[in-house]
Length: 192
Image (tube, rainbow, N blue to C red; front, side, top):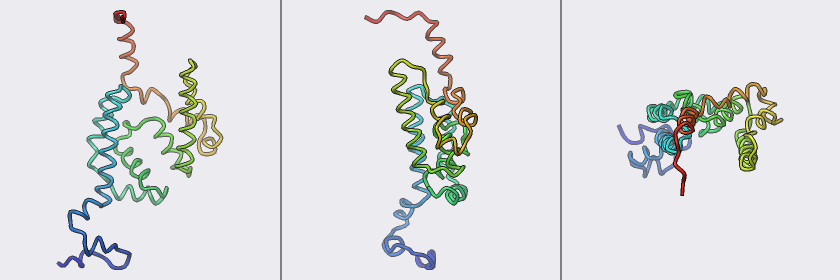
């Protein structure tokens, strides 16, 4: 079989692919490899979050276990709905390991599924997260969930009850409450 036999000329093909591209080069720039790289980045991020106590070890293990299981067919189904390759891959990965993704990512994915604009919603969530961080630094309780539940743009896509459910902290804090209780119950030496 010649190199040309492996291509269809019914759609545009870059000359770099069929004329100059080696097999290794085509693999390197493939959709499969791109998505594997994204997943490697997400696993590395989750490992860093675990080291900081933000996610549980089993969540990282779940991500790592599914890292190489790219499902291009499923991702393309999702992309046909939402028209965004990265978010389609995030949703595909989340379907494979639903317990591993953080609350605001889940909220964003649920709202995009309902027709929301990913970029605009990402910015809305970011603005509320920054405002919540400022409130926490000022000594107030964390207002993020209620701010997001009351947001009019989000309210057009989901009820406040749904938003609160997607952001329920008990699904995302790992064993932090138990560790905090153990720490508080143990004697702590004075720092000099």
